[in-house]
Length: 479
Image (tube, rainbow, N blue to C red; front, side, top):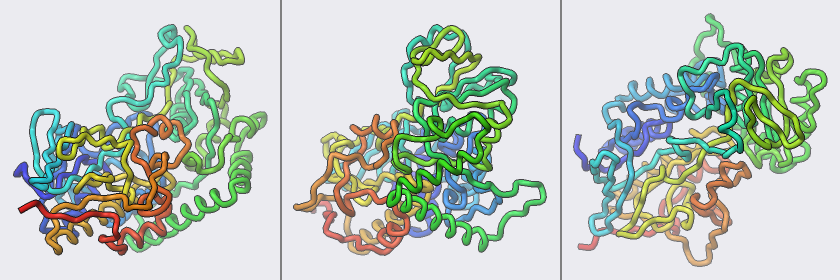
């Protein structure tokens, strides 16, 4: 396989495999390869190994539209998702296009050559006309470290979900899980199955929604493709309606979500303060609780929730600012991800370093002043793949348009009169987004320089909207 191709895809996870499928079916004349920094494919679904790891979106929409999810369970285990991604890669002969162990560290654009030179950590270089970053938005090497005081005093074990040790045995142990997001909500009921007791310790609560998760019994046959597509359509519409209702009537929807939780809590556990967030629904991502497993663990007495602020770790556990002490054998710091832009790749254009936090984002995928580059980012209010697949299909449309019109260089340019806001591309108040505000691209007040969160309006715009919309500059190499 040559080191000079039309398109380099960075990342062989859920997005990268989907991008490769779209390229080989919608741009069959384009050569491409995938550079993957790890030694295996699967991305997130291979990296995370903590107990109970699962999707936090329904798989009918998180799965690929070209290979519908046909299992009965909408919320799937990480192992099942990983198998699905790898089976998809094999089914469409994408595996042979992946080069493993190639972590991309830099990408240099040359206008004179109308090409990117991509360098990997092992010193290899690759050239391409178009660079497509399917790297996700978090740092693979480390999760967020909240820097809790007194950590060295704790005599038990402290682990982060992003780096789960193979030898950790929590059976019969007292466990404190710090956090209230999707990871914590997954870990608590999974660990409670064998632990003596699991406490979810949260500084502030999260909105949660129960989801019936389907039949996983041995006699449950896979859905037909037609039925799976119908379920996907229903779920797309349902998710969009839930989000729009939450933004339009936040007080009503907040009350609805709190009442739903209240009906599943054991006696003596109040909704306020444990399940009454200080923000409006969808200011942060909603947590899905499949089959109410978290609440079932609480009713059984194997799990509980504590809301408070950590003062310090102690020899035996955690002490809160109100004096409460939680004893533990294991502390899990489910304190979130470290969000990054562009896979932490050093990108420059004709020798000028690109500062991702200072440029605008065009159509949620390309960067102001950066030619022939797209960054695949999914939705934060719906399944990642819905947006990722739209981006991949738009990249294919753009490549075909460039070939038809003999265009070599496409560069997003903010037109006069369009103001960019001091606002990161992802409009959530979550801690991981706020911490990364300085590296995320800026967005404007309206499309195409504003990130949309509505698949139903994004789909026609990305699939059928004009390529030459006045926000991009087309060129050929000089001479």
